[in-house]
Length: 379
Ligand SMILES: NC(=O)c1ccc[n+]([C@@H]2O[C@H](COP(=O)([O-])OP(=O)(O)OC[C@H]3O[C@@H](n4cnc5c(N)ncnc54)[C@H](O)[C@@H]3O)[C@@H](O)[C@H]2O)c1
Image (cartoon, rainbow, N blue to C red; front, top):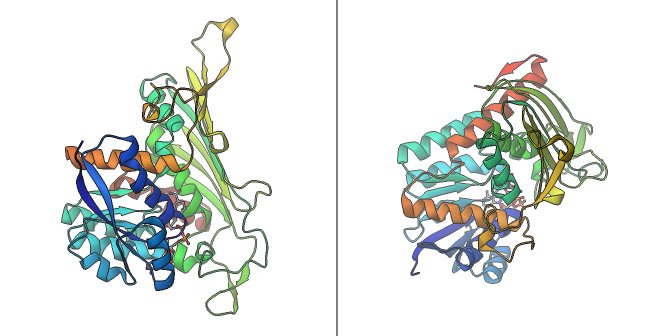
């Protein structure tokens, strides 16, 4: 198939800059698509790092100022893979310049900025997407199909957690390169916006809107040296966050995230319990979906562990032979394939900025509830 070029301008060359670049480079090798991403420019603040990243990943040029990138007529897509506090300004300027805007999660540092970003892309009528990539894990997409087919029946419980342990040392500073996640100025919040945002996006996608939450958060290490000032400063992000939720469909939810669960690096799990069945998924075993079907013959009833690697499983016909697994990086390739298909067909892609705003409303209500000690409505 001959492909039309879609010229990419990437902002940020860290963890996500690499994940997105990999997706741009591989997507047309595995999916037949009308569009082909062209790595036109990568943008950041340090020219030496940019030169090195650009050469390694095959970008045609570099930009040390995102405002210059957004002004370039040879760029179709601005892809924001920089820290949370940069999202709103870059996305709004990109939309005003008529660019397609892709943005990493969480959509913004706070709800006000997130709403501003939705307004900007909708006013400019530009295609937009947020990289909530876990939706494109084949086993998670299969979970969505099973729920939509009604196999779980009425859903009563949604239980999810995202556990890490990398910030437990009190010697870890806050702010600056790599540690911006500990600095409220850059991140907005701690695990609520960083980890729970993933759990919430998946939950809303699988189980519908969240109506109300009651939450508690904790900052275990109250002061850390700030990399910018060199001074010990109060820590204003949450190290741990837990909340109860009521979904519009009457389901109860429990959500937990922490960076203080010793021994856990990225334990993202969810379980859904319905009248006719249940399902469960675990990021550490991401190619498996656990499914219990109460309608099975009673003597054979039990949890099945579905190895989501067959040709009729979501996305898997594009990869290897049945039984062989794929991994984390493929979720970004799937999202890019879906995005390029949506551009070709003119249909909206999900999650859009507006979809991601629903998650921002929940994280905002979680933080509000943790302060007020009351149930808060997500609006
Ligand atoms: N979808 C996911 O699973 C996932 C995973 C990790 C991070 N994220 C999100 O991706 C974003 C980036 O996170 P990361 O882990 O890649 O961070 P990172 O620290 O690894 O990289 C951030 C990059 O942004 C650049 N940058 C910082 N300020 C900038 C500015 N003003 N202008 C231009 N570039 C700037 C840095 O130089 C660096 O290259 C965050 O919003 C984060 O929440 C999403």
